[in-house]
Image 1 (cartoon, rainbow, N blue to C red):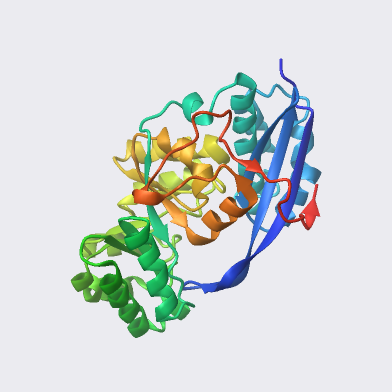
Image 2: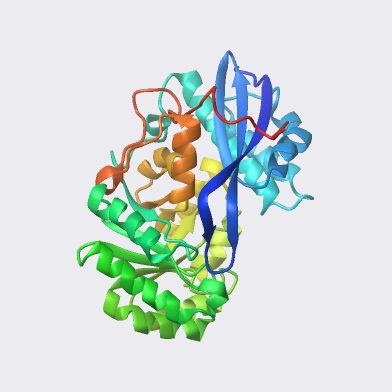
Length: 365
């Protein structure tokens, strides 16, 4: 038995390269919480994008549940972690901490077995489709155009997404102008996606979709709040673009409700929020049971090995903030050129290693 000897966590605050915002939120930094699990001289690494308090929660509430257990018995550990956070509330900060630990446990297991996570999970494909994601509402036209040009015309990524729903849907005219700009920049062949982050009402989203039709928008993410399943279903029934949501899901019941409500054409799931790789595969099974594809939300390098093992995957979101952070703080980040990325197969685990010269954490546990 490979007993887990130590669990640690640290938080890193990484400033954005310029102010960012979407339909309902603005920010100037992103916090990365990294967890490490050690056994037999091996270290597994996981992470999530969450408040720094998640690092403290790992040390104060979760580490003792993991330490001393069999590192290969991930289902038993995962079940114990979920029970441990009952009174803290599974969605949100506690769920993010559990997710980061689960990823670290799977990385450790693969390393102990001397194989890559992609091979341990079993590949459904060698390379994973992706889309460029950014286009923040805080960007001016020049910055938006430069980002889209880089993705489509320099890297050859054939799918891109911009943020709309600015100021909770009160700047609809600017949203439409930015959609038109995006189409002009990317040309006729690339797919154009939009994300309102719940900024519109249902009928407003339907009207906006009708106005965006001339720009061939294929994907309308969170046209209304993900909590408004009836509103999502109404928009889905009225528009031609695929409606997507699910990024805030924290447990199987959340995804089940969304699928049963017929609220989405493609279910989003985020392994850094929904319970790590264990939670990811549960969400994918629920989607498959409703004849839906899944799309990985953010954390692109973390999702790669699991996404490659998911038959009903549509794509991964190559989110500007997270791909930049993962490339700067970790060795082994993937190359998205051509709109496809390959998980690491020639090294143990997920293949990413936190750099020794990474920025100093500002909270540890």
